[in-house]
Image (tube, rainbow, N blue to C red):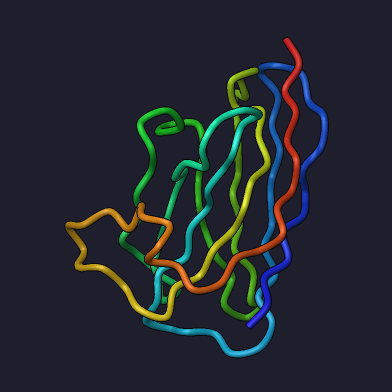
Length: 127
């Protein structure tokens, strides 16, 4: 399984970007998919997740209401629509895939839950 993230770039505060994550090889229909990010000098943090089969959407408080995670099974692609971007959203964004899923009430925010990772795409938000 390989994940390839793309769509990052430079955008002004208040702008929008859409990240994509192409999944090749086997997909795990019952697994969780997620986006994480790592800002300069900080640890990687959870951004959003959903089940590859759909549903069970979760967001970090910092992006709730501004970011939307979705997927297109036919295209084997995971998306992250980012609106109203802020300078503090500047980070390398990573997509991740898990072979399994947590129960619906548990947010799959732990990095160790995920088995496969993309290479990351840089998002820079200028003020």
